[in-house]
Every structure is written in C-alpha cells, then in structure tokens.
Amino acid sequence: MIPPMATGSTLDLIGDTPLVRLKGPSDEAGCEIYGKCEYANPGSSVKDRAALYMIRDAEARGELKPGGTVIEGTAGNTGIGIALVANALGYKTVIVMPDNQSKEKMDTLRALGAKLVLVPPTKYADPAHFQHVSRRMAEETEGAVWAGQFDNIANRRAHIEGTSKEIWEQLEGRVDGFTCAAGTGGTISGVGMGLKEKDQNVCIALTDPHGAALYNYYAHGELKSEGSSVAEGIGQGRITANLEGAPIDTQFRISDEEGLVWVRRLLAEEGLCLGLSSGINVAGAIELGKQLAKERGSDTRVVTILCDTGFRYLSTLYNPEWLRKKELPVFPWLDEEGTSA
Ligand code: PMP
Image (cartoon, rainbow, N blue to C red):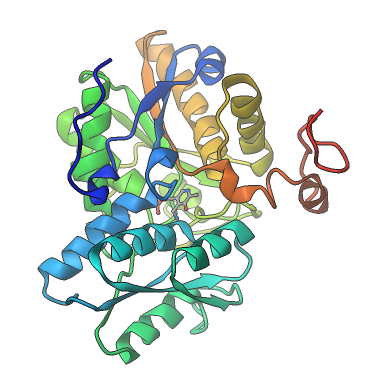
C-alpha cells in the first residue's frame, strides 16, 4: 500500500482515519462489520474532528482572534481535541468537565496545557451543569469563545464533510448500514446525513446506552431514560441542534455488559484497545448487521465508530477493582493485582 503523502500541518493529521473489518463481530452478525478507527486521530478520539471544525468556524465568523481563548464544557475528549488544535493555532484553552470522568482524561488535559475546571456531575436543567458553567465563563472572559459542541452544528459538519465521505470512499460506494451512539449527536447525525446523500438505502441506526433518552424518542416519540451506564461521552437526554433532522431509521439499546463483551473480545482476539462507547457501538452494529443481512445477504456491510482509545480508561474499564465496585465483569486476564497472566 502506498503511504499517504507528507502533510504540511499537524492539523492535517486529523481525519482520514483507517477503516478496518472486525472479524469477531462479522462472524457474530453473519455479514461484514467495519470499524472506523477514530482513536487514530492525534487526540486519540473522534472529537478531534469536531474540535477543528468548531475552531475554524469561530475564526471564520470573526469571533476568535489571535491570542484568544476557546472555552468548552466536555466529558473530556472534545477538550483534548480543542487543546491540541488551539495549541497548534496559538489559542488558549479552558475546559469545564464533570469530576466523575476518567483521571486519564483530566491528566491529559492538564498535560496539554489546558486550564481544567472540575464541576460536580448534575442534570442539564441545573445551572451548575458543566455546559452552562462553560458558557457563562466564555461570556465573562475577554477574547473568549464558547465552542458549544452540543448545539454548534459545525460539529456535525465535520462528519458530513469528513467521516461520511471517507467511509463511502473506503468501501467504494457500497455501504448498507451505519450505527453509533450519541453524545452531542454530531457523529450519528453528520455521518447519517452524509451517507443518505450518497444513497437513501443506507440504513442509519442509533445505538443508545442505558440511561439515555434517545432510544425512547426515536422508538416512541418520547424523551425518556431508563437505567444507567458508566460509558463516558455518550448518553443524551435531549434533542441537541446537532441531532435535529438526523435521519434515524431504527434504534437499539445496548447495556454496559453487552458493550464490555466486545471491548474484551476486540482486545483479546483482535488486538484493539478501546473505550466502552466503542464496545457499545460494535454491539449495536452486530444487531443492525443481523437485521440487514436477513434482507440483503451475507455481503451486507455495516459500519460503526471506534470512538476512543482504551488507554484513556486504564484506571476504570481495565482496572479490576473499579469493575468490581461497579458490579461489572472483570476481564479474565486481570488478576487481583491488575497484572496480566
Ligand atoms: N464516544 C466517546 C468516548 C466520546 O467522547 C464521544 C463524544 N462525547 C462520543 C462517543 C459521541 O460522539 P458525538 O458527540 O459525536 O455524539
């Protein structure tokens, strides 16, 4: 294979991620399941794309000026993307994050030079919610812009213009289905819109974790959540601007246990170390693959997103004590001390 040509800017390293056939999930679904390797972005997550688009959009609108500050409320990955892009373009970064997110994300943000403000996790309706705190900080800070990823549709544009086009080209224009979970909804909505533009027959499915309200919204027209999930970065309770008009054809609800089966199997059998949202996405892709393969046959192709690296969760998903505390199954190769067999 010819390697890509040399690039003139580190920002060009965002996007153009590999697409890989996942063997175990394909065998399980009876069709072809592909993972888009978003953990291969410079900030190790899908959110680098949205970070770049939102910052470029703020510049284009004339709101972000040289030496300015980008402020954002985030579960962590968007903050990491923003900090990298802001460093490359000479801006400062302030990140407001709930204090129940992984320690690795907090340490990474500090290491990148972002100012980190931790707030207690609360409901969106609470003025102390991280999104509202970050918005107010931006309003009160001279030369600052608020990225506002949930309702800033520059986020989903990154996936309409980038992710969906790449998937289409990587599969040479033959895609049957796409699914992923929603945090802001930028990925599902943007990839969904981009693929539908190419071919109306691509089936777009939302994969929702427990504790989120979107499954009930798309299935029954009612925003209602049941249960809970420890997955970081996904699980939405409202229709964000990014989700408005998302072309969702069907929906699945996936538990943390089901997602963890695929986090474990992809690591042990295919050498991929991923976060829980990726495991939940893969479980959803298998459901969609099984459904579509019934009508379209075993060469059906379903794509999902491998959102971020598992190295971001060594203190949680890959820590036996943490797993036990959350009453989740411990991977067999992690013993009491957490060393490998
Ligand atoms: N997985 C992880 C780990 C994330 O951090 C996010 C972003 N919050 C998502 C999935 C969902 O992406 P989106 O915001 O585009 O819906």
